[in-house]
Image (cartoon, rainbow, N blue to C red; front, side):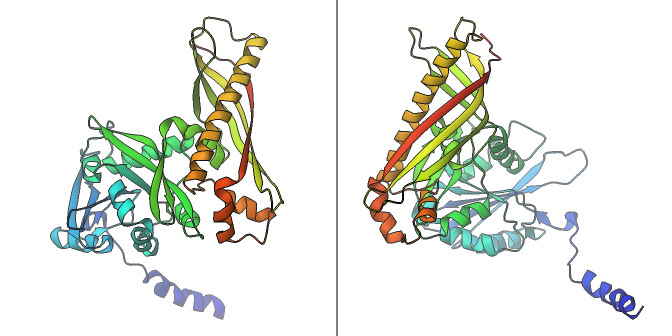
Length: 361
């Protein structure tokens, strides 16, 4: 009984710890964007939804400039009728110029320590000015631009060729010795925003990109996934286009323990169905299916080899080969990895299994 009495006494104290916030009394940001200006100041933009009846999808954009990203929020709040809070933020955008010049460690340190932001907030890079993307009009008029952009990324992760991404995953990979990571890229063309690939980071700075055409292979190297689209041309007279939808794809890794001849074999396995074909032949023919499987295997192997050679030439390791090699070679140091990685033998083996042929001709 005495314990129950103490618990009841403690409840008011616990409840009083949280500061109540009424939606109508604050500006609750759902997206944030940052550009770097010519004088090295930072311009920040906050997408604020308007919660009023018959105004679904309506929003305002509040902006301000300062010398640091962490101070922009305070600058904007001073100019607004209500304080700007970050508790509903879904996505944070940085310009490509900004992350190449400043680096992500400085930009994300404040975000990681900000208690209002969750670790699952999406980070993304914009090719060009973030301001132009924030001020573009989403094709879905029932949502604001912040919800629209975060929806684009989540749709790519769930049903397209985009690998998993958020603040926590990015920092986990990038804060290791020689950390390499990636973030989704946006581009604005004719006032329409689309995902244009992935930005690659090495030791804090953005150094390269993975274009859209390589994203299926990149996602397959990074993680196992069940959705994604791969298009290639058959080596026939018509050079027919074949589109394969992944049912289950992923990679496994075999690491050598030889110190003299270090090597890694990447085994790519893809199980899929033909989503579309520009051929007139009936693709239920098993001989034709085998031909498609073999040619797709060759095409993927060629593309994966090209990607890996490019990563090695730039000393980039976005798929985490260092960790896989270290698991087999415990004495590995980062300095030694930097020496062996650019010339390491990396072999690609691809196996494709077409299980269904729901073809539209």
